[in-house]
Image (tube, rainbow over all chains, first blue to last red; front, top):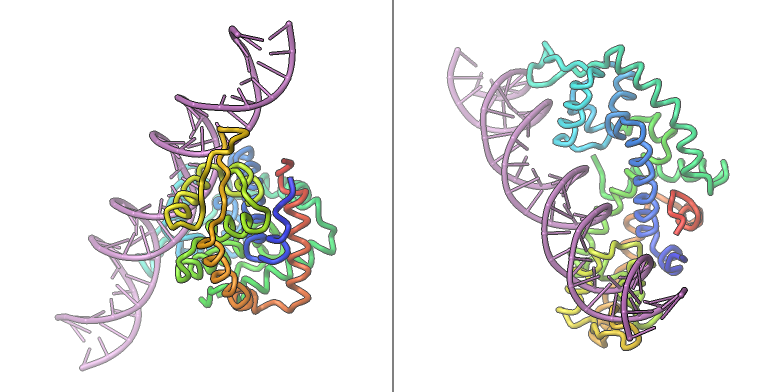
Length: 148
Length: 148
DNA sequence: GACAAATCATCTGCTGTCAAACAATCTGCG
DNA sequence: CGCAGATTGTTTGACAGCAGATGATTTGTC
């Protein structure tokens, strides 16, 4: 029932990982019910916001490994939500572009996110959510051995 | 370079998972250099604090899967840091007990934790670390679809 | 132009985790 | 007692993620 209390109090790293695992599982369940994986959702969201990208750019920005991005884009392409054309200026890379179908699918998925977040983080007050967001942003920016 | 900004701001779940992944990797690197896995460390810490436990209890409290706990205890037993005896009151379960060797190993590992945490969370002020700790405790206690 | 080094997408193998199945044992109910 | 169902530890199979190697292409330097 109770999470071994000294761990949460003393080991910030462990608590962070455990909380993340629980949240990730909830997100997977939500995504599975939605039929659109978390990675696919992120790719569509980014393509919609910033326009066509190479898979490398998507990998870097979204922190998804290159070799995983291959499968994510495969699935999206097969579903018709994305087009993969060679970038004419650099034929090594693709220009991954979101299609109209992809935009519709994204809008549909986006609409369900607020309720999902509300459900997942219901234990936190709006203030706490803001604090958490700011703290995580700081951690991702500088810390944790990720000086890219 | 920059983490696609809208994600960090809007998707608390994604930010949490990304931060956790970075921290987990740092912890693994640290543990590998130390020669004592994170799971093993946690088990020793809990056995030292609360006395002999079954593997099931360890699994529940430390949020480590039963089938993973088998291997963790195997390694600890083989290294002589733990004894596994059948619980006479319930011969299905073990009474896992920390040995003197295990206690020495634990003390040695514990001594390095503060420096590791300081290094990993150097981007955060003491205030922020306190906030993060409190927020994570709340999340682990109630939230994220883990109503055990 | 020619060649070395870097980059993009991809594939392969490895590791770690989880779900499901299994045997042994315990508990509860008649 | 006798039997159904739950629990503990374990093994197995499936799967995601990552490091490293590979082929195609670009960039930089001579």
